[in-house]
Image 1 (cartoon, rainbow, N blue to C red):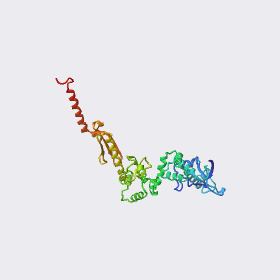
Image 2: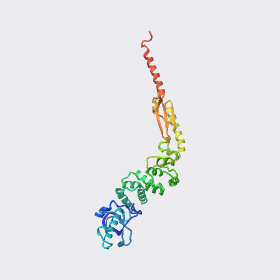
Image 3: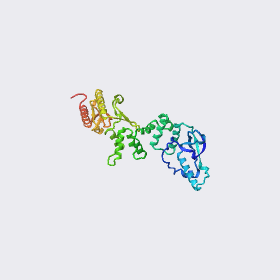
Image 4: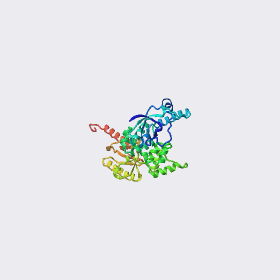
Amino acid sequence: MKLEFIPLDKLVVSKANMRYGRKAPDVSDILPTVRSRGIIQPVIVRPKPCPNDADRGYEIIAGSRRFHAAKIVAEERHAARDGAAEADTDMALLPCAILDAGDDAAAVEASLIENLARLDPDEVTQWETFTRLVKEGRRLEDIAATFGLPDLAVCRVLALGNLLPAIRDLYRRKEIDAATVRHLTMASKSQQKAWLALAADPDSYVPTGHQLKAWLFGGQSIPARHALFDIAASGLATIADLFGDDRYVADADAFWTLQNAAIETRRAAYIEQGWADAIIVPPSDHFTAWEYEKAGKRKGGRVYLDVRATGEVIVHEGYISRKEAARLARAEGRTMVSGLGRSPHGPK
């Protein structure tokens, strides 16, 4: 890049700039410095396509706020001179770093990198910018490397593309929270439309956060990782949650049909291993450890398969009830007392 001072009237905000097409940005925080010291840090520009070099202008890739602040100060000084035509050279020229023409992806990256360092853009703005980079041919891993982000962080931002524009706008205006958006990225377009209809009706209950996840999955949100069977081989449809580490099953009834069969297989295997029994604890009950004591196979220990409504199965190996443990302890005590009462030389 080369540095030049370019007249303000030769500069426009580029479509590649992440602030393009919006209202003029708030520059109140930098305006006092620009008034007193001018623009110190160059804005990043590239030449506009133009057949006539004499009319050539430049597009601002990064530095839209400095450009708008410089224009405000230039207009203030022009008004202070009562509209006199003489130029204020301090503000009429802007220091610029000039990129090569035509590289849209590099221009978008330059804009987002600078803005990430200065004013963190909202996630919807990041999505708009990352999407433009993808359209320019950048791969996901390239975007991640450019901005020093994990691949998953870029995936999470791009997942906002699954949302209807009306939902993205609500998120941009902070009218819905991140947890709600996270779950809506897993919703179908028809579900999103149904949710928007509820949101627009002041008399309707609008599910948000974790209640929204239950609403989307018909009351049961089952992570695929809880399956005891090979979920990929089963052909069971799953929905990705790019904001977390889970995938969720799309059909809860089909999941439980396969999961219950896998639980029965697991139960039979424990009995074959020599355990006294393997008991399935349904989701309506819970295995409460304080009601049981540990016991090995030779003492009649059982296995408890504690099934949760989320599809998770927690295995408790080698337990008997406290009552059984007490009976065993009494029986062992009687055996020991009986043994101590015998004379080693036999009866006299």
